[in-house]
Amino acid sequence: MGLGASSLSTASGSNLNYVVLQVTLKEKLIGTGSGNLVELEQVINKQAAKGYRLHTITTSNGGSKGLMGGDRIQATMVFEKII
Image (tube, one colour):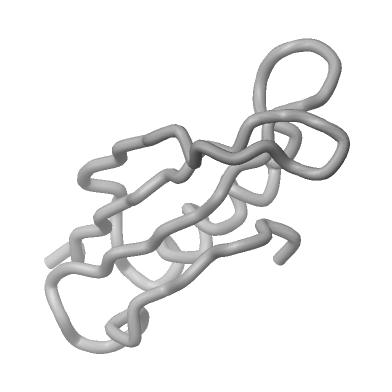
């Protein structure tokens, strides 16, 4: 997936109402914005294809610098099953 430290709950794709997904975004060394928003978009669309919609997203600073600089931001997303 190219997202570094990401984890998906075992509920993904199961018949549960909510799924929690955590992704680490790597900030670009030069400029602003995340260097892997395309991968994040793919993760969201994959959950949508399984019948989930993004319910909540929160972010926090990972507190560590990536290789060659750039911050790491941890995004936690809650997906809700579309009934």
